[in-house]
Length: 416
Ligand code: AMP
Ligand code: MG
Image 1 (cartoon, helix red, strand yellow):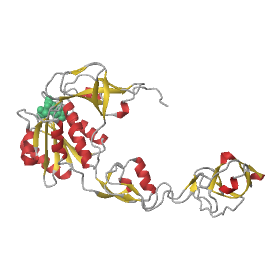
Image 2 (cartoon, helix red, strand yellow; image 1 turned 45 degrees about the vertical axis):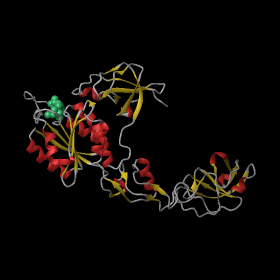
Image 3 (cartoon, helix red, strand yellow; image 1 turned 90 degrees about the vertical axis):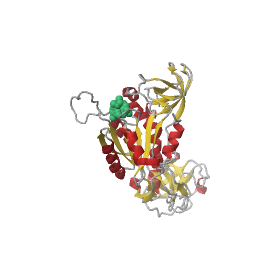
Image 4 (cartoon, protein in one colour; image 1 turned 180 degrees about the vertical axis):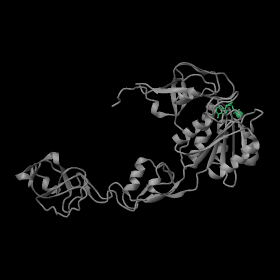
């Protein structure tokens, strides 16, 4: 058995960031930037008002109640040409350009008008710059806005749009083929023939890839036939950035995936027994001139998904250019015992993690832990990482890999 870290090193060394491509801004969301973006424009592009009110000369407001003549109004989107001279004000709306001559804005809440709005009484003293958003006050031309490795989330997209960026270099997100292998897999709907089971792994992995933002390509199912599997993988490798297959990597008589990967991948392939439970067997290799990574996951459905979390997801994120590869690892308090026996392996237990009113994260077993019990995986939002030893008793601490942060809050009460 080899440690998780060694298997990860082997996998990650073959899964570098995909070659950057130039894309339109609208296609860049959820990608990782592969260049430095410098501002060529100012944000805001011109000095404008942060409030609805009156644009004034700050010096005119020194008196406790200044009486100013309203000489015009300017709305957001207007081109303000009316000059504000001494003793004058211009009615102004949020986002409207500051008129020439004005250097501050009084909030409408601190003013009142007379003579049908032609006179404004300002009841506050403002300084130059008050309630003014300066040109370039957020971002100045020449500023380095985002660097390589930046994940482009919603706010990044807004910033880049504000700057008028039209195209940029990003790492593509890998398109991943998903294949289930095994002679026992039923290939038609309807009643199961004797000895056959339905395919759980392919739908689960396709869904997981989609949830993680990767392109998922359904490669169907294949039987335990070396030649057919080899042909299928070679063809698929040409059209995918990576392939995730399940089944046939253990030590059984029909575990052909392992053999095929070793044959096709040569020195760049390896079958492993990893010191974890579940998901001990794992195979990995790269195929063809494009060195397409192929992940051979164990067939047991829970093992397949756990193996995905430990090896596939980080590798695909690396290919996408992400710098953070893993899900959050958090400390939690155990509710109910987490028993185990010494076997030299790290155990990954399906648990339900919840934060209480005290903010402490607590975990309890979700149900049966055998590797064919996929329903327990569906009922879990975290994996407790139980190091080799005698387990953890109720009240003790354990580290967890958080799979779904959205379900961690225990309270259904309106939090605000
Ligand atoms: P294997 O890794 O091929 O030895 O398979 C281990 C166990 O997982 C066996 O009980 C298989 O029948 C089961 N299995 C393999 N592939 C799938 C799949 N796609 N869906 C559900 N169970 C599977
Ligand atoms: Mg099999």
